[in-house]
Amino acid sequence: MKLILREDVENLGKGGELVDVKPGYGRNFLLPRGLAVLANPKNVRELEHQKAIATAKAAKMKASAQAVAKRLAETPITLSRKVGEQDKLYGSVTAMDVAEALAARGLQIDRRAIDLAEPIKTTGDFEVPVKLHSEVVGKVKVKVEAEAA
Image (cartoon, rainbow, N blue to C red; front, side, top):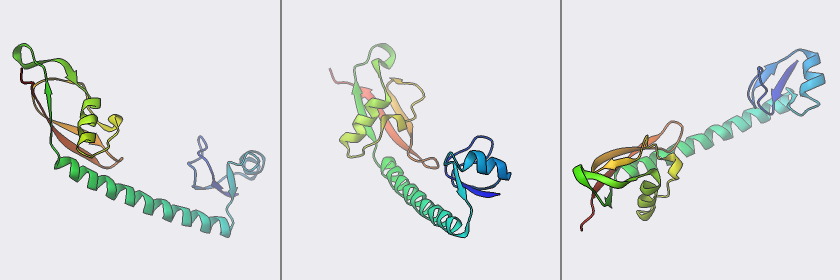
């Protein structure tokens, strides 16, 4: 029995996939619970249409992420912090600080997208990766300098 899954089903497939299952499993489990629909020509056409829409949307999202990555590369940010001995910062520069600095420059980036392995605790130049899309990682140059006393 050929079915189109509406949702992810463990050990069977992901939503939107065309699967072949035993008739009893399809009739008694998948169809009554609304986890799948019969794979008739109408439903298969609709599945293909939905896949085409999803592919176009994914391509559009990737293109916009690449545009943002390009803007990130062109937008270096400078942060001033109080420093102690050996150019160590009092406190640290976190992903939240980088996100706020980018927001001040007109780039709204979620702080969770900023992939800072650990907070920056010294002065200097750093390249911070920003995950914009599953396939696109932008880099922003962050310069941490001593605050003028």
